Amino acid sequence: MKSLLMLVSISLLLGASQSYYERGKLVELEELTSSRSVNNDNSRYYKRFSGQKVGITDQILVKCKADVDCTKLLSQFEQKNISKVTDTIFIIKVTDYDEIFSLSRDLYNSGEVEFAHPNFIKERKLR
Image (cartoon, rainbow, N blue to C red; front, side):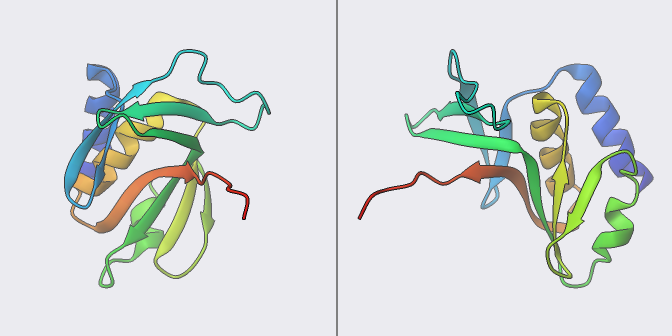
């Protein structure tokens, strides 16, 4: 657990990259100009290098592996607003968008979670 805190600290000091892990692969994002939501709903928009536009909120979705005590793992983030969705899925609300990416990468790299990524905005489509 101390090593996870060390990883988070180092990532913040080295400068944050706008990337996260998806299915074991690092996904790089480029922030779109004027990406802040017009609805003031704490969302921003990015472009994957594939060209796909994605929106994220100020939250990280985390799913711990079955044999991991997720409450214990996330207890080191006392200053964060953490909500429990299920026994293994949690939402961490952050105040700094750069922290979303570094924290999600560090949680994934800890080896104790199945996934840790920004909470994506699903595009609504009319039927």
